[in-house]
Length: 280
Image (tube, rainbow, N blue to C red; front, side, top):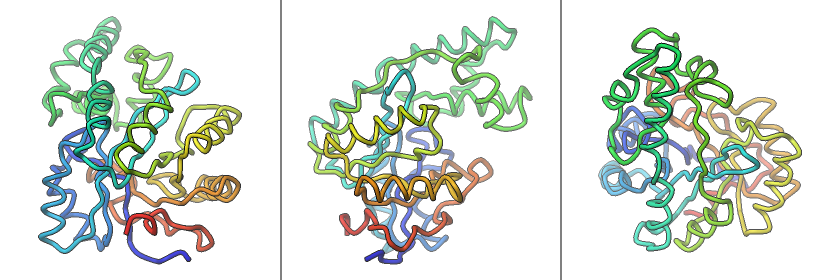
């Protein structure tokens, strides 16, 4: 039974590449009528204690979460872990491993942009970084918007930070097997994040769904930020074929930057089983 609640199970804070501190994310979610929230920073658990305390003070249901970057067929895909135990040694150690190399990659990205005349981007991006252990392409994109290279973050990615562009640097992320192992060792539920937004081919995504299922993966984001309309319908068909639970999220990063505000995603199709029925 698809219980109708305002669940938002994928969003970000300044602990990774969001614009708001964890407590501010929770306050915004509460103000927008969210009744169950998961903070899912990239490869990081550092904002969860603050977010959970604020959620408890506001009477807002809260789930520990994380979003893990995974390499799949020479592309990156993201796997969300929901309901994870933050004390899990395997998860903590795995995420530390996943974060390693980010600073070196960032310096290489900056070098690549310098070659086309855009200098000082690494130092400029640092002022947008809330967590020194995690510098990302989003921080670069915000700085490039600030200095007038592009009008918005999406345009920066399209023209400078994706494969084949001057600021792109190849990086080997966690394997799918490792990411699901970390999540499951921490008692969590694994969710394929925004499948409609990946650069993996259709055939490659079919392979991903099958392997994810074989590894015990449980859910897929059917509605996720700008993944709505036809993309959400396609994700719903995948959920039905593979028997996945369905997740709903905004993938909110910050006001003025995210297309969907926290708690404002479309509802799930009524025939799907929501992942929150396994979380609450």
